[in-house]
Length: 348
Ligand SMILES: [Ca+2]
Image 1 (cartoon, rainbow, N blue to C red):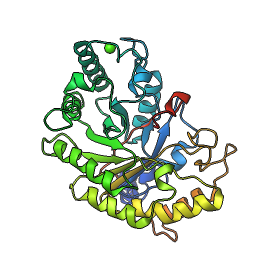
Image 2 (cartoon, rainbow, N blue to C red):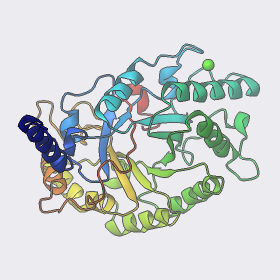
Image 3 (cartoon, helix red, strand yellow):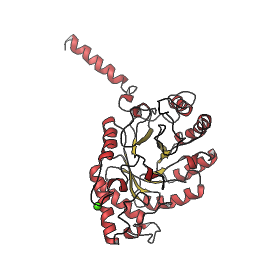
């Protein structure tokens, strides 16, 4: 081995020695450690995305009504944009969502039960063929709040009370054998009674081996005024299932100082809970969030105080970057969607 070869070997070894510290080459964003901090992608990827986030959920583009607004005519273009961006950067991707009572295709409710079931099955299988390597799939969205019009065609309530949810997860498991299957709903973090009802559905799925994680949306209307003690109570209730928790659609509003204090008080409760394995925010750029006061970055690129604090907290500042000690790249998941006016009715 010549001197040059030895030198090269030493350099390679040195490089590998420092690779773990430089792993933000693979995963950018604010979060380091084993938990991801993601955001949504609409029809195009914001240039600042990787400065802050390392997981992708399409805001609207993987909703059934967006993809198949015209029967049997699938439009995956915006979904591909989000998926390809995630994959090319090594960010977990979350498909959102397969079965949901909002933003359904307008033509589905008028079909016969047999045709409805055939169409839902076709939709789930098509999504699985397209995004088989999605790390996460929101299989059923908002079962407590927005049941699909076609639920009687896919099992209805049945003997369990939630047969249509079980059927949906069975189909998703076949279509997405490599993905972690999630349920997702709002109104959970602020309501222990709703959390208990949610756990009943989750346990039906868990006993059948059909669910891999619990999604809680955590939008501003639940987060702005919830107490820390209620949050902890709900998180502990969900954690008792033994399943990981994913905060899926976080946003908090207010003027600069109000939003800052909300983030300071409540973000660590979510981030540092041992069962919470990742957090996805629902937008961050002024004028591109579904609520006008939940943005973190102005339209000219200035960071609001809550984002300045979040950077410091996750970077090991005063907040200590809580919970970030587990192995990088350990257990990621993702998903993104883009918002449009039609999204307001049912929320994201
Ligand atoms: Ca179809």
